[in-house]
Image (cartoon, rainbow, N blue to C red; front, top):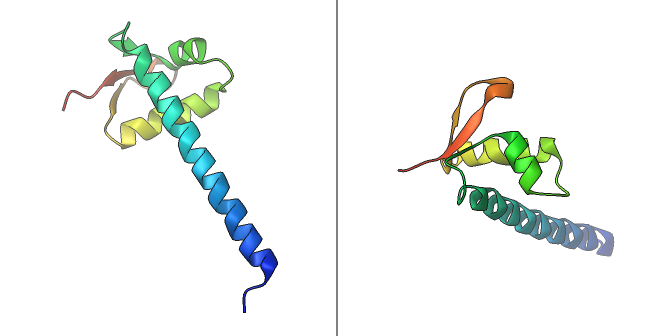
Length: 87
């Protein structure tokens, strides 16, 4: 038998997951908006354009977009740049 605490924990987890998904979608939209003015962006470009989000968070988001084939990554480490995937 599930306790009320288990049910509350599951509800809290679900709400957090929904919020995280919403924030991710918003960040991805913000990142894609940068491409309206630039063909290629760096992490620094994203940090400058999206206030209130850490460099590490944006780096993870950019790599997630590469994994999802939304962006292509060129270069290594601090010289990495990102372009929109045309396919």
